[in-house]
Amino acid sequence: MDSALVVGGTRFIGRHTVEELLEHDYRVTLFNRGSHENPFVDYADVHHVRGDRDNDEELLSAKREVEPDVVFDFAAYHPEEVRSAVEIFADVDAYVYVSSGAAYARDDLPKREGVTPIEDCTPDQAVDDSYDTYGNRKAEGDRAVFEGADRGVNAMSVRPTVVYGPFDYTERLDYWVSRVEEHDRVVVPGDGTNVWQRVYVEDVASLLRLVAENGTPGKAYNAGDQNSITLERTVKEIASALDTDVEVVHASERELSTVGLDPTDFPLYRPYPHVLDTHRAESVGWESTPVSEAMERTVGESVESDRDGDDVGPERETEERLLDVLDTV
Image 1 (cartoon, one colour):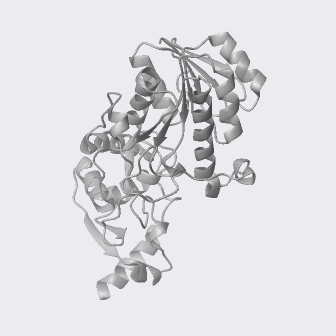
Image 2 (cartoon, rainbow, N blue to C red):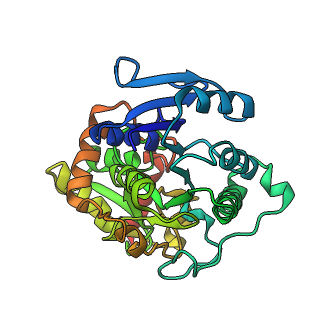
Image 3 (tube, rainbow, N blue to C red):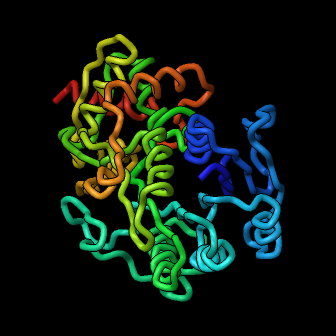
């Protein structure tokens, strides 16, 4: 394989995947509407075909123009988009659909491909755009991949859990970086042992490439850090990357309610653990970056950026009021 068509590819996971492909001598073509800044505009080895992935004729035209060996699909948010892509790219060496750990329907520990059931998807959910149906739509996209593989298409999917790393526009980790960088005391909801497994973005990119090269058609591959850490450990890893000290202040649901907060108001908090099994990913030669190393790179870019996560978590003024309450207890 030496030619890749990346559907999407300019914002976060796709951006890192393009870098991964270039490092492994792929010729890369981006296919998207051009609605986001293209970080590869000056790269001689990255070409851009403008088009709308919802337009099958434009997607087919891109396929004929590029004649890719492999296709990475980052912009399929509805099952019908995946079904169309599986048909259009039926003769490529590999079609890799970017699914999600949210596709799982049950909180197994850990969640395993082919064992833990995935979400159902009604016709109404399949065309919805709300976050509430995201997992349902991703699961149905997986089924479209599996059905295509049953017909002989070399189609596979990758299911990342929460992704972190440089250029993360969701700002979920930026919130915690900003808190640790600017304050000596950081509020962590609950007892700090909450585990919502994450995965470093460069590791998702490497798994996507490895699945395209070595994966089995009709299979899904989980992507998650092999060392899952708690939210409190995450805060301390950030502090270590910043070479600073921080006091973690725990706050129960009742204590948070005194200032109108809930544990789920904090980014990366989940009341029940979310952990994906990664043995299948390891079978294609994949391994995750050590958390301390991944966090150092992530924090470094976050500090240099203009992102602070203020819009995705509680206001600091509210946290200060909570800290005053806790200090009087």
